[in-house]
Image 1 (cartoon, one colour):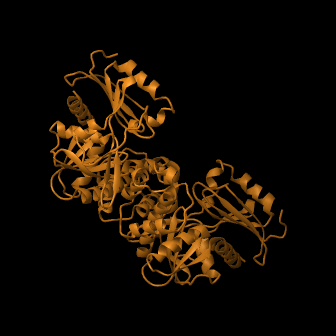
Image 2: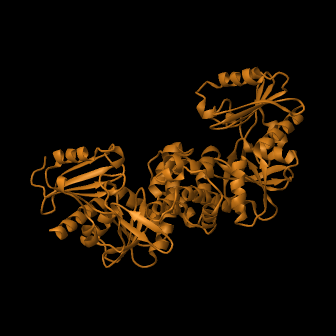
Image 3: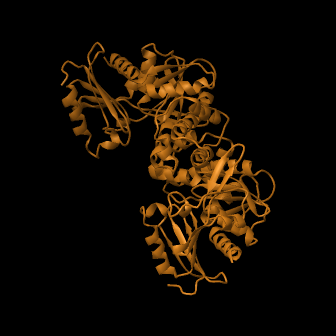
Length: 296
Length: 296
C-alpha cells in the first residue's frame, strides 16, 4: 500500500483500467494496470472492485474517469455538453461521499451533421493542453477503440467526432472470415501505407476488406501484409474523416497509446498533414493534476 | 427416404445447408434444410454427414455446391477462372467416385483493380440464366454474407466483385458496441432509406456506425430505427460499389434469399436503377437441372 498519496487517479475503461497513487507534488508513487475494465466487473461489484484498488494503492481521495461513469459503470456521471474545459469537468463531478470518490463526467456534442459522446479521452486531451504539451487551439486526435477527432478553442473542447476504428479492427481480427489473416503484428511499412492511400482514394471498406480474403487465397498476400493493409485501410478512413472534421490549420496533436499514435503519424505522412505525438499516460496524469488544482 | 430421386443436390454453405432429392423431370421429391454448414462439421466428419443426408434423401448421384468444395469443406474443388459458364463448371467437377458424388467448383476472377472468389452463387446465377429468368447479358447481384456483383456476357460469368455486407452486419449485431441496438427486424422504411442515401453520399462507414451509438444515447434513436439505418448504410455502400462495378445498362437481377433481395430492391429504388428479384432456391434448382443435362 502506498501511504501519503493525495489522489488515487483511475483511468477505468471498457476492457482495462489503470490506477495511480499520486503524491501532492504530482509524483506517481505506485500504480496498478489490469484487465478489470467495467465489462469485467459484475453487476453490483464496483464497491468491492474500488475497495480492492484502495487496498493496493492507499486511502487518498479517488478520482475516476472513463466508462466507470457510464450506464455500464459504477455510478453514472451525466455527460457535460461542449464547449467544455477543465472547469466544466469539475462542475460535473459525480461525488460519492461514502467512498471519498468522484467520477469525472464524459462530454457530449451536438453538431449540424453529427452528435457524439466521449468518456475518458477528455482528461487526456485537456491534460495535454494544461501541461503545455498541446496548443489551446490545436486540432487533436485520440486513437483507440473509438478514435476521437477534436477541435480545441481556448483550451476547451468545442466539437468532436468519433470513428470506431479500433473496435472494427478487433471485430475483424476476432470474429471475421479474414481474422486468421490479421493476427500478425502491424508494421507501418509499404502494405500499411498502401491501405492508407487506398482509403484516402475513397474505396468502399466492406468491398476492400474482402479483397484481403481473395488476395490471400489467390493473390499471394501474406498475413503480415494483410494485417498491415487492413490496419492502413481503417486508419486511412479514420484520418480522412478526421481531417475533414477538424479542417485546415495546425499540426494534429496525436494523444494516446504510443503504439497507436505511431501508426496514425505514419498514416498522416501520406496526407502531408503535420502532426506530433503526446503520450496518453502523461496527458492523463497532467489532466488529473490540473483537475485537483481546480478542486482545491 | 425418397426413392426414385435421380440427383441429391446440396447447397452446402458456411453456416447452413439445403439438400434436395430431385426426380429426373426436375420435381423436388424431398428436402432437408438445417444448420449443418461446413463449419458445424468436425474435421473428418464429412463422410458421416454425407451418409446422413443419403439416409434422409435416398441413393441418387450427389451434386454438391458451395463451401463444401473449399479448403474448409469435404474435398477441395479448385476454382475455375472467369469467364466461365455451365460447361466450365461441369469441366471442373471434383468427382468422388466411392460416394457417387461430385462437387461443383467455385470461380475466381482477376481484374485490373481486384481479384475475387465465389463458391455456390455461380450455380444460382447461371441457373437463373439457363431457366430464362435472367438475360444472358444482365448485370446481376447475389446478396448475402458476401454479396456478389456479377457481369454476365453470353450466359457466362465474366467478372465479379464481392462486398462483405452480410458478414459485417452480423459482426456488428453479435459483437459490437451497437449490437444491442441492431436486434430489431429490418424494415425497408424511412430509416433504411436514410441509411442508403447517407452511404450513396459517400459517408465513412466506421464514423457513421458510431453515430448510431451516439444517437441512441443522446439523440433519441430507437432500436428499430437503428437496425434499419445500419442495414441501409451497409447495403447503400454495397450497391454503390456494385453499380460502379457492373456499369450502366440494364435492370439489375437480384438473385437470392427473398428477404435480402427485397432490401436490395428497396435500396436500388434510391438510385433509380431498375431491378427485379429472382428466388435463389428456384435458381439453384434450375442450375442443378442444367448441369445434370450437360453431364448426361
